[in-house]
Amino acid sequence: MASTAALFTPVTLVSRPALSNQRVVAPQTRRCKIPIVSASVSAQPFVAAPDDLVASILSKVKGTDRGVSLTKDEHKEVAGVASQLAGYCVDEPVKCPLIFGDWDVVYCSVPTSPGGGYRSAIGRLVFKTNEMVQVVEAPDIVRNKVCFSAFGFLDGEVSLKGKLKALDGKWIQVIFEPPQLKVGSLGFQYGGESEVKLQITYIDEKIRLGLGSRGSLFVFLRRG
Image 1 (cartoon, rainbow, N blue to C red):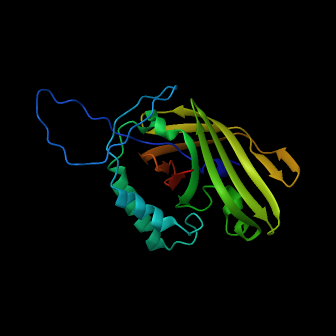
Image 2 (image 1 turned 180 degrees about the vertical axis):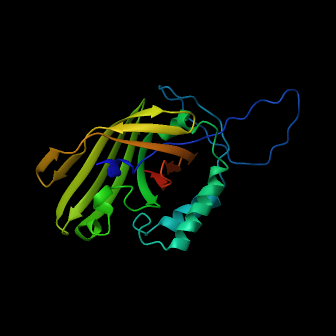
Image 3 (image 1 turned 90 degrees about the vertical axis):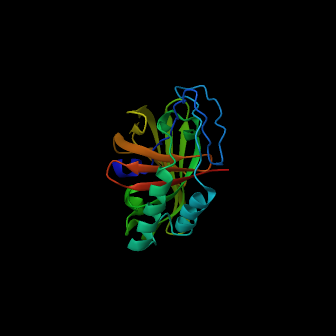
């Protein structure tokens, strides 16, 4: 179920070189404290994007069934704000400890990228998506889960476990094991391994943006 895997992806951040014996007057910006994590990552100081940009992109995707109900022009508006946010991304987001944690998938520019057939036009008639979650665990584990209700009364979920590999400072690759399907009290594994590559284009304590290798834009919101 490769299309299900394509739902989730990691990030990008910027380290600033020290200037020798020069006094620099910096604009007042909100700085984020990044916790130290015991993993193959480094704590990088960065300047977070203005709160209004973060609030703007979240307001544009809220209540849209993760982007499904948006018009073409509205998708362009989301992409425009994402492009502005990317300007605040650190140089090597893959090394930022903020990538770890539990994330809700709140938007994707291509409905079938997260969830595969379950999120197709026909699939959505049968399966109502209750939640899409991606968990990134140190040092290199990614877990994707799509929870749904079939026919309005039968609960189920599809889950994937994968191993994350950094391709460079911005791109990651995740190789997923065969998906696990659970419906009611029944559960089984099906299909084969799948792979996804994703560029992290912005990250802070609240949101993460990702761009898939085929151009799909993702917006993740940190849980809790």
